[in-house]
Amino acid sequence: MKERRQPPRRPGSGGRRTVQTKRRTSGSAKSGLLFLIAALIVVIVICSVVLARGSENRGSSIDSTDDFSSSAATDAAPDTAKESESETETEPPAVEPQYELPSDLNSRYAILFETATGKKLVGKNDDVRTFPASITKIMTVLVAIENIDDPQTAEITLEQSIFDYLISANASVAGFQAGETVKAIDLMYAAMLPSGADGSIGLAELVSGSEAGFVELMNKKAAELGMNSTHFSNVTGLHDENHYTTLRDLSVLMTAALKNDLMREIMTTKRYTTSATNIHSAGITFSHTVFTSINASGLQNDYIIGGKTGYTLEAGQCLASVAVVNGKEYAFITTGAGDGSNKIKYNVADALSVYEMIASEV
Image 1 (cartoon, rainbow, N blue to C red):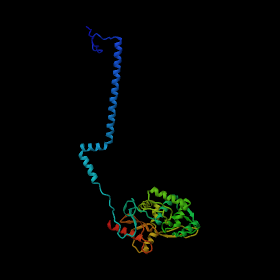
Image 2 (cartoon, helix red, strand yellow; image 1 turned 30 degrees about the vertical axis):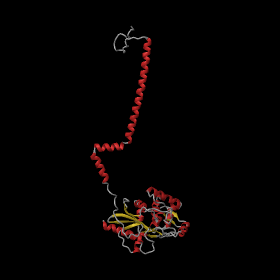
Image 3 (cartoon, rainbow, N blue to C red; image 1 turned 135 degrees about the vertical axis):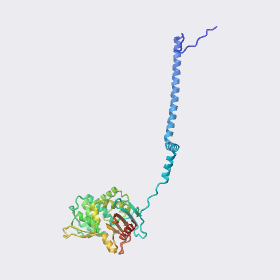
Image 4 (cartoon, helix red, strand yellow; image 1 turned 180 degrees about the vertical axis):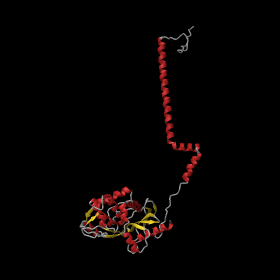
């Protein structure tokens, strides 16, 4: 009979056979090592699969966060979700204009706004490109004020070339002459009140040495104010296809101008006499075209306190006016108000009708 061999006992399980032959011990060790390596490989593979699946699940969760969160919020707090939907459905409509412009308004472009805030109240084609004509001079004088330290002492002698240019362009002038030495402050009033192009060119040459150089400052200022639909090509408002704006942009300019104390003073002065010069010993007296236009039209003015007129054939009659109605200040800007051939100034007639409308509705 063959001898029955007892199976080896696991170490630590008890019994007397705790020592095997060297060969058996070595073979068992190798088998155990291979088993451990195989088991380790299996574990690594399993962990890799688990981690990969976990990553996919996490990625799927991130991609669908909005859907999941929305669903969870609905399940967990349906009342909150309904409140949110209700708020969306009951969103207030767009604010309607506070006023309606008169149906018989002559001006093709118009905007009414509060001067303190620049808030638009009503408009007509106010985002459509138009030509500003001499309303341009508001920007000209404002930029000059900001770039001249002391307008009361700064001065320039006006060259003959200025007048040759303005005569050829048939531009309006304030009455200065070639070779006349004029103070900056007088040039400012000359540009604004009688709309003198000689005052505008004089300021440009005083500040920048040339009109072209000064126009760069005007366009820079327009960009700073956010007048993104405006481009200036001269300082006078003489017609140029590349010299344009919108009334919305002009309302931004007007609001900024009225916040400047000197600019406001100039815009609301009815009459002004310049200081004595080497040619005009008694100075020159200017009258504000806004008020002369109102008087020439025979219209009753209870509201307008200042502003700036303008006219070219392409722009039509223009007006940037400032008014006080029932103790509150407004501004109304128009362009394209008739061809200027009649006695009635349609630009001022439109402005007065709008201010009268405000007075009657407040």
